Image (cartoon, rainbow, N blue to C red; front, side, top):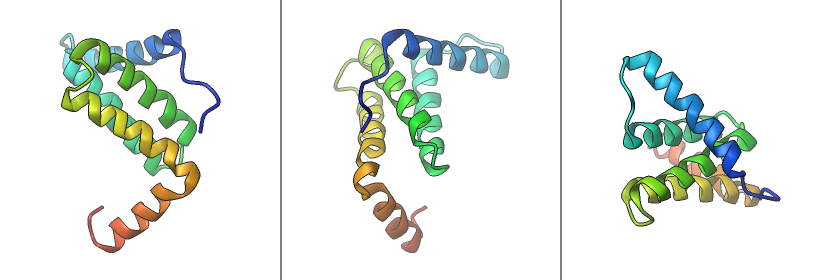
Length: 108
């Protein structure tokens, strides 16, 4: 696991980068749902690419924003929390095992 969580300033920088990306893509101001969704998709993509440190940073940013904007029990907040747990549990080999089994079963 990471030795320390991402600081709020780092989370804000990550979120601001995603906001700018979404603005450029859509020409619109993204809402919290779109930002959190993009962060969660980015987290999963980085995990799948084996970029665990970056995935953990983005997962922390997604969780922090989701808790602030949507509340601790919202489904998008729980997705963000799940992504962080998946990332951190990879240190124990669980994600690799899950990925292998899921691929074998045709789920991913």
